[in-house]
Image (cartoon, rainbow, N blue to C red; front, side, top):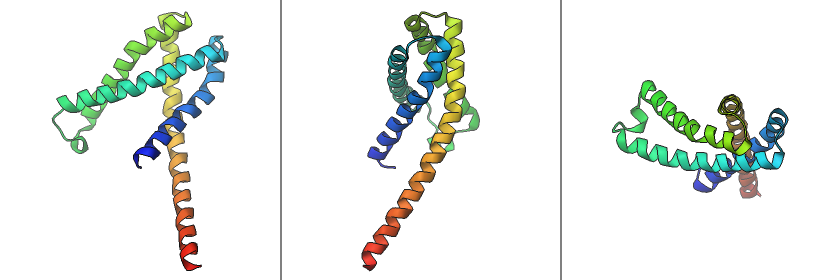
Length: 147
């Protein structure tokens, strides 16, 4: 994927996630959809920034090339990423929504489960549709050349 497609992919991923998760979260928490949309967008922006900074830092301290990193190191990387994310987001969500830390932690756990399933299905569907689209473009290009 090129830069433009990666940006499109990320924006589509986040937009669809918010559309799917906001109504359910509003129902569960009793919060308004507008408030939750603000929280969701803020968390998405923070996650993107944290992802960039954390990975930049991790790559600088980890001397192993990315392709040769072990499963143990990758798990350590993920734990650090998620731990750092939860360290900031759980208290922020609790404060903003006026809920307890435990309720925010439970909400975060629900988000982790949702995003695990959602990310797997979204990327699978995106890759399938992308492949079909590229095949159709190739077929049209061949038809244009033949005509």
